[in-house]
Amino acid sequence: MKNEMRDLLAEIYARPVEIQNTQSIGGGCINETLLLSLSNGEKVFVKHNDQPPPDFFHREADALRLLGRAQGPRVPQVIGLPKTTSPRFLILEYIEPGNPDGDFHERFAHALAGLHHMSHAFYGFDRDNYIGFTVQVNKPETDPVVFFREHRLRFQQHLARQRGLLPTNVDQRLDLLLNKLERLLNVTGEQPALLHGDLWSGNYFADARGTPCIFDPASYFGLREADLAMTELFGRLPQRFYDAYQEVYPLNPGYEERKKLYNLYHLLNHLNLFGSSYLSSVKSVVNHFV
Image (cartoon, rainbow, N blue to C red; front, side, top):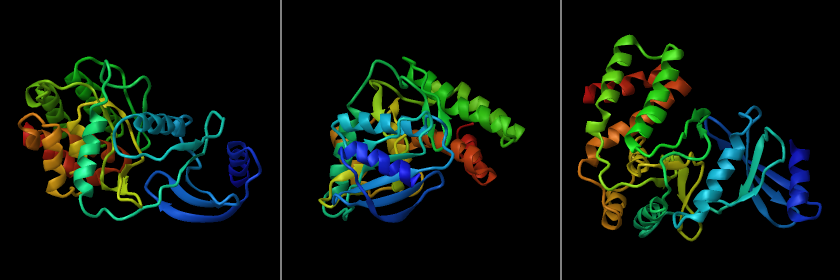
């Protein structure tokens, strides 16, 4: 893979470029990451995986380019992607991290609201992508409840059912919840909003100037409350973040209750990715509404 990276870097910079230093930055449950120091003085960030789905990094590059066109948080620019049917790595701009000091969280909230103002004619996207390694179905729909019910919750339910991860009683109660979802979601006045799609605390940071940055997207056009809810799933941002968002782009009343529904999508996905340790969290949300 190193030779493949070197060849691609030579193509990007239009001259031979040596990789002088390779620093592992660790990785999550899906990919590994590297910081490369190059002979031309540049640094680049590399995400890699030995066995990704064929279009995995193509879809991430698509999302980053789209996010980069919005008036939202900063995103790393796509520098290079191998011209193969199943690339094993993606080369991105390296953004030097800094400290989220001062009014970072207010600026992050305003930038996220700016991202969410980018809209589209339908909910979904023009192609499927991934949430982790799970396919994320983005079939276009004009009804946001249909989109969220069928292509987010029901799709994950079917996967969990096929894998034997949903006990019958939980599966049946989840069906009851899905059948009444239209009464539980308040979509009054909402338009399809460009979402990051996987906005937990590990997918945002401040750059060296304190500018809010986001990365590792699972983007589509959806209900913006889904992004906000995800920021609360594994710990939450300071309250001033949510207050600042409400000031510039108010939510419909009842978000505090609805956020559990949006996060059910991610809990089901974690159940499918990582197994039964997430079943109790799924049951808790389902039992709350049914």
